[in-house]
Length: 142
Image (cartoon, rainbow, N blue to C red; front, top):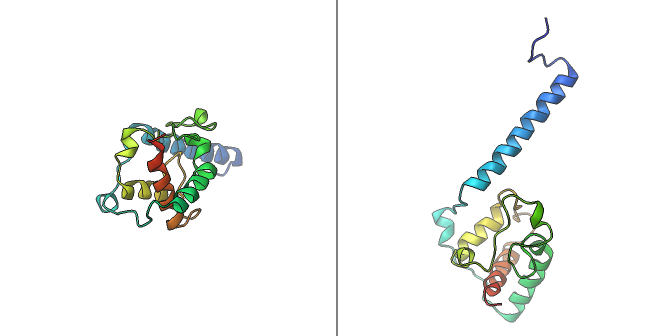
């Protein structure tokens, strides 16, 4: 007897796996689109230990060009070349919404990521993430 859930058939097994993973991807992306990205309270109160020196800002700008501008754009407006294909759209780093977030909140978001934004926990050191935040703060002034 053949049933819908007969996993001994390799074609059906592949088909079920595809639909299972597609539903997870769709659900997580839908969740990101409809739910605000809330930072834990403890993270919100963390202060940036890197002073906004010329050297730190230059390092942050270089990191931004490599890691952030493809999605957020060179000026941080959320209009980088990859932005068209992303849902939800990248944040506008010059906006009051982003600029009013605490440094700790931005650091947590850079560290943890949320689809479609990747986590930078393994890719960038703590110091580099703090330098990025220092640079993001300068974008509203341009």
